[in-house]
Image (cartoon, rainbow, N blue to C red; front, side):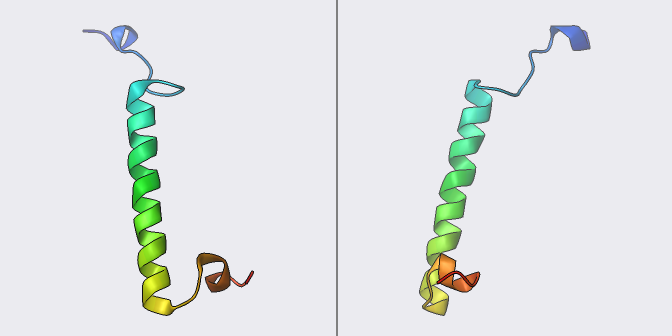
Length: 49
């Protein structure tokens, strides 16, 4: 198999969308955990709230 035969892994392909969903779920969990631990919302933590 040569490098020309490998399909690109960017754009709206299933591989990219799966990783996008996984990272979004991870971000939500981290954001909610931080909010529970500090008592401040995400915007308040970075100075906008």
